[in-house]
Image (cartoon, rainbow over all chains, first blue to last red; front, side, top):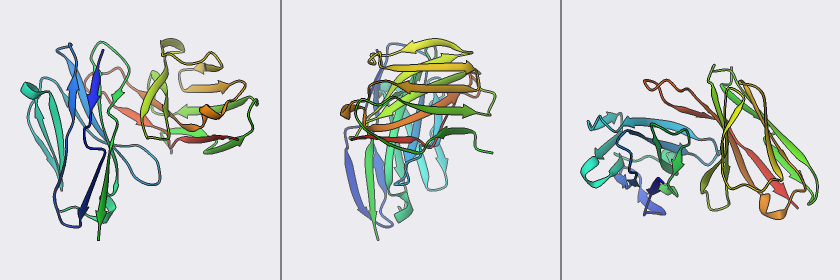
Length: 114
Length: 114
């Protein structure tokens, strides 16, 4: 069975601070896919990134960056110079190649104060 | 133009009633899902259909019955609604193309049972 753990339930920062969200996953499969989703106060789930298990390159997209380390089964997400619009719940998720379902972590609520 | 649309967005109903939530995707995806998000924001898969065939059926009360008339539609019917069914229900779709794995979620249906 797969498991995704987001140990931080809530993080509060002041605008322009950096914030890192931790994600640790468990799976016995060697091929899998990791995802991050953002859920703003309006409620929809917004796709941020997908990473394949065989691609450990870190990725940067604007103020967002992701650090994937297979050795520690972690796929952490950093928001640089946070803004109030970054306030949301962020979910890390895992899918094994042989399966269909997306297993979510419990989410981390990020509150960015002006 | 909405990729995954679900209706209604809000549903308030009394205990014991039967209700349905509809979902349609225009992405040409062959797999569709229902996820439930509880009051603590935890997201868990309920069902998955691939080309109208049920492939995932998690531990869900049999009062919940999905129906997929074609691969672009996946509806969720709930009988004898209970207070504990109050949640946000998300429909999603995905492709089986491993190069472009991704899940697109609908905007959610907030079900409140009173």
